[in-house]
Image: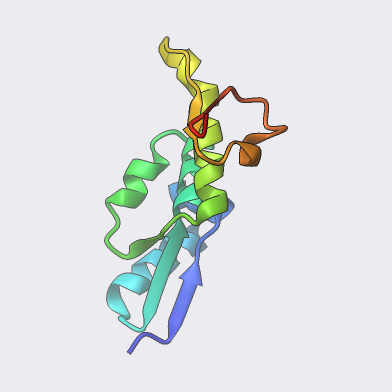
Length: 114
């Protein structure tokens, strides 16, 4: 029976690269089935943006489970993607049926309701 659910935030995920306490927690989760570690997908992405490669490392750890994106989180990911696609040599728009959600976010929008 799982008794401890622990959610790891972005700073904690970045600390996987050398913090003894965080490493001990991951180690504990491997050997104690009552401990379950969770990482929100956005926290993983944020940690990876600051410490390249950490997302791949987290993906290799069987004891860290991902928490799905909710609507606000998905919106943030879409905005991030549009802002960074030009770095990859492409112009991008957010194609959406909910354009008001992007007002004031300084990203180009394709309103699919028109």
